Each structure stands twice: as structure tokens, then as C-alpha cells.
Amino acid sequence: MRTLSIAFLAGTMLCAASAAYARPDTRAMTCAQTQVLIRSDHAVVLTTGPDTYDRFVRQFGNEWPEVPVSTTVPTKDGECRAYRCEEPINLPG
Image (cartoon, rainbow, N blue to C red; front, side, top):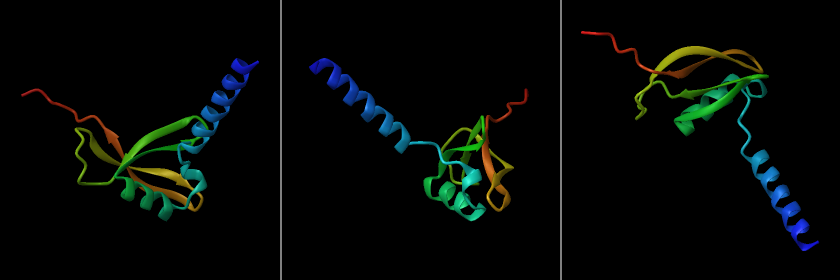
């Protein structure tokens, strides 16, 4: 019985932790809130649709090998400009 209680408690704690770290959804925020979140965290993974998400970054000043590419994301108040990470294209020669 004690083993079952510990397993239940561990499972409950895991579910609570997962909910606490849920990915922010751009559709539930205004454009200003989305942009502030990206700027303050420098890079953040955001949900953009029912089955879509991506990593967004500040326009400049990132220490990543990826390149920031301008795009739009859906927000409560319409489309919002953001920068998504893309691998740089290495052209030969």
C-alpha cells in the first residue's frame, strides 16, 4: 500500500510540474505581451497553433548559430511580428 501511495504522489507531482512549465501560447497573449516575453527571455519556445510551436528570438544579440528570420505569429489582437530561428545556409565557395 505504501508503494502505491508513493507512486501516486510522484505522478501527481510530475503532472503539476508539467502544467507549471507549459509552453506559452501566442494566441492567448497580445502582440505586446508576446514581444516582451521574447525580449525578456532572449529566446523562447512558443505555441502558435493547435499542433504547432517554434523557437523565437530577439532580432539581434543572440549567441546562437541560428539566424533570426522575420515572421508573424497569431495573437489575441491579430498577427504579430517575431523572429524565428533558422539554420544558416552555407553556400559553396
